[in-house]
Image 1 (cartoon, one colour):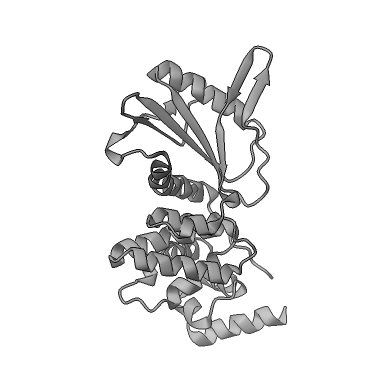
Image 2 (cartoon, rainbow, N blue to C red):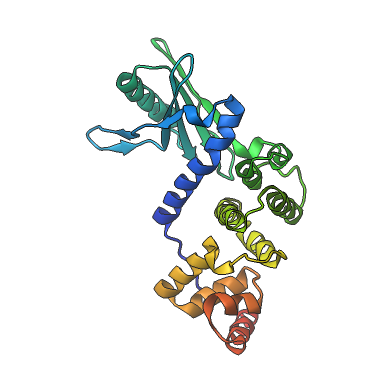
Length: 272
């Protein structure tokens, strides 16, 4: 019987949101020419009959103070323009400063959300950034590690994904000298790679990199395997890893199963 890996989407969405803020803020700050010391995060809770929290908002100090509000979407929401209007009205009333709104779409499918409202008595618009439309070279050639990581979500221009991933890892390695920091960026890259179904190849290349000090047990993937193994059973996870093309040695390392048992599971998969 085939088993399907069950992901805790709520946990994954939280990891993604925290990661997006950590990665996109340095990149966007560079694009807008904002100094880090001029950015101050603000409370992003919006109280209505049902409380809603925006993804990120900060106040930028300068000659003219203003707010930046950022939302992240992995899927299209046909009511997103109304949500953004709702956020704008609430933040504007609360802070009383100009607001720059940015929706960052990181989904794999075609982006179909509206960026404006045009009614007889209401004109409203905001900016949508579709990462998949950005040439990955524009991101990967940056000296900012966060931008290099974002290249995994960009437009590969028909280039082979394995080559692109290798390019990303090589540029990260040249840009980040500290092993602990490099491992943290690898952790982030693994998470983003799942949005493009490239996690298997990304993990494989990270594991095969000849870098002393990288601990595979501290990667996001390894920790997820450990958690799911406890919840679903080690052999089920081993089967999923083998179906993703992971090596027997890697499956043994992640699950603690013996090579003979993993080979037996692989034989059963090949028979199905």
